[in-house]
Length: 180
Image: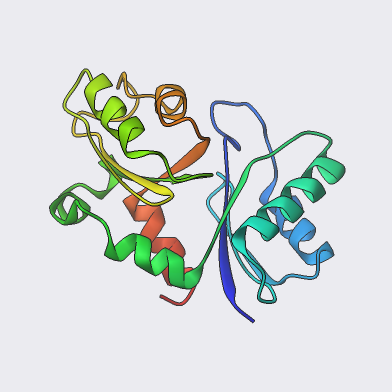
């Protein structure tokens, strides 16, 4: 069965929207997905599912999470091959090696329009750099993420889509878990 990576948006961050990873793994088991494993406490899972599109898996996971946990969760699902392409398309190879915790990949629900990406680049007030490829944005935060004015809210509003970000260390750990 194909291997997939699921990223949840806004889980166990800042004391809000807490979700135990054991509960998340149990939900994957209930859905009949094999080998569900989680990474960290921020809603990262690797699992096996029959050949189904990422969109179909996202909808199924979101519906089940709403039913099981009583609140909505955004899921971003990529198969292992797509995740490998995300890594291969990284336009910031030097930063990936020298400062991987300040390089993030943001998985997006929809690919943003080129004009939206340009508008986001124009909205940057600091030294951050953004590039986009399909349903992913690559962002370098050379001065750190915590104090940056380039927030998820600004990114989502400007790109007109929802997203969730993971630093490069996490991206690579998920790839290893998925067998890449």
